[in-house]
Amino acid sequence: PDTAGCTFAVGLAFSFNLVATHEPTIKLLQSPFSLPCANKYHMNADVTIREVMNREYVGVNESDELVGAVELLLREGSETAVVLRGSDPVGLLTERDVFALLVEGPDPASATVSDATTTEVPAVSPETTLDVAADTMATHSVRRLRVTEGDELIGIVTEHDIVSARAPRDT
Image 1: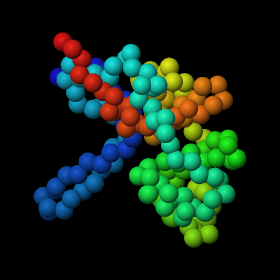
Image 2 (image 1 turned 180 degrees about the horizontal axis):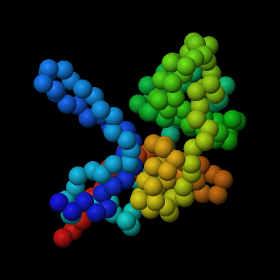
Image 3 (image 1 turned 60 degrees about the vertical axis):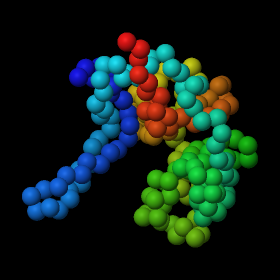
Image 4 (image 1 turned 30 degrees about the vertical axis):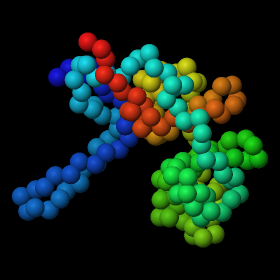
């Protein structure tokens, strides 16, 4: 099938294979990679980030206890929190950030949100197209982008939002 326009950042994926010994092997696939799609399924180039971004998000203070922030994320069913210094966003806290802290330290019981915060999160405008946002994610090896108007954070867009925005084209 024609897969033109179907390559975009979707993060890391795992491929599971059963070898002759019936032992599962796991292979890490690098992002970006092509998703199989027929020509009638194509990322709509006219869709903007404004149409798919999350306008509501969890916010935590950089001095909050990490365990409390994780409890809030779980309670809210969110994978990401915007980290604030006062009312100014200074980064993101993600599940992956928490996992990295568990492996690398410090002790999570004494850690603050700032110990696990990702501060270098690229931003896009709400008028950015899906394919430009996907390219930005791939270029910076990130799964989320800040959506800003001027200096104001107005939302977050995830690679899941972009992948979900794929829609069948009318033929």
